[in-house]
Every structure is written in structure tokens, then in C-alpha cells.
Length: 265
Image (cartoon, rainbow, N blue to C red; front, side):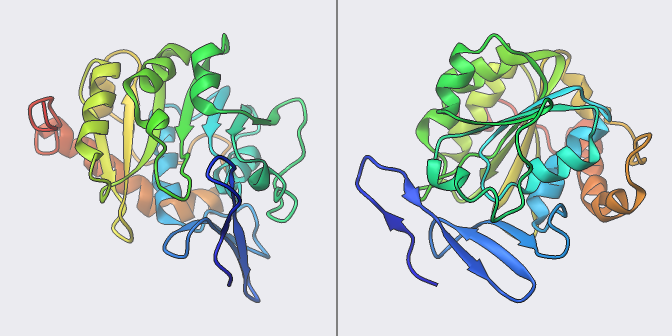
């Protein structure tokens, strides 16, 4: 596998696709896999953090509208497109080289309920009049989380773009030296506690925030298959959903609560 090519300082990084007999993976750097797809099961979630991000189903099992920050190899986009047929999905991806690989990773074509837009997500949420039930933020480049996607302005704009009781789910990296600062900004924008669930297989830490009563994070529904959801797909999600549910219970007991003072203020 060759080193991903950074065309110029200003240009977008051109990712590399690494193929085996059974999988395709997308890389921006040799250290971190951005996305992985099983060739025979292209809609399946392969990475644990993506399964944890689906924990929003314990809060809202049947969202009608969703925005995603970052396309990557389309893992979350494909999974939600297949298993949430009632949901309109908008994917915001800044990198044209990533979008050019959508056929390589079997990302669905745009249609009446699925759209991939080439745009800066920070600008998109700052300017959009659209609102969503769920926002999944998983936008990384070769340097990690872009500053604009970890800013108070961005989280304020996401808050505004959510419908009442809507949920933001943000993939973060615990090894980011600014992790505590980003957590503090999330708390400030969402006016309350934050539920953070660790991926035990990597450094990913998934943050859940709700627009509205923050106590929703401590009262997530039990781990039950949503009505009409594919049972085999739910069975694959089950351990990850249990992880989110147990984190919610711990937060209710005060054991995992994050306050402004704890996160660096």
C-alpha cells in the first residue's frame, strides 16, 4: 500500500484504497483506517466505533431525517440507508477524492432520500435552514479532527440544526491532546451532561448529546430491536448497544458524568 498523496498544502488529501480477498479499506495515513468494507457484505458495519455510533437508536429508534459529517467509505451511510428506510439522509463530505470513490465502496446513488453533498460541514451547518433528528459527526482528515469541526461554533450550529429532542453523535479520539477541550465545548453548546462511550478496540470515544432535556442521556431505552429493524443486523449491533446502554446507566448513577470542571474549565 502506498503512502496517501497530499497534493498541495491547500488541496485535499487523496486517500488510498487497500484491498484484500474479502475487504476494502480506506486510509488517509498509514496509521489509521478510515473505513473498512466486507466485499460480500458491503452494508455491514465493520468497525466497533461505527456500531457504537448507532446508539442513537436507543434514544430515537425511527428517525425521519439524518445528517452525516464525513462520507469516508460510506459505512454508516450504507447501513442507515438500508436499515432505516423511513429516514432521509444527507451526507456532507468536503473531499472530492473521497466522493469519487463512492462506487468503489458501493455507496448508493443519490435519490429522493439519500444525498451526498460536497461541502465544508462547518459552513453547511452554519448556513443551513434544514433540521434533522440525528447528526452523525465523523469528519476526519490526515491530521485528525479539523479544528472547525471541534469548535464551539460548529457545535452551536449543530444544536440549532437539530429538531427538538434531536441527538448529535460525534466520533472523537481520546488521544487528541484537545479532547477535554472539545468535550467542554460540546457540553457548553448542548447545555448539559454528555454521554461518552469508549471503543475498547481503538482510541475512538463516541460522544452523545441531546437537544433538550439532558436527562434523556441517563434514560436511554433498553436494548430492544426497533420495530421493523432487520433482526440479524440488530444482533450484530447488540454488544455495542449494550455498551451504550450500560454507559447511560453509569451516567445516571453519577459514575461517568462529565462536568465543566472535570473537562478542563
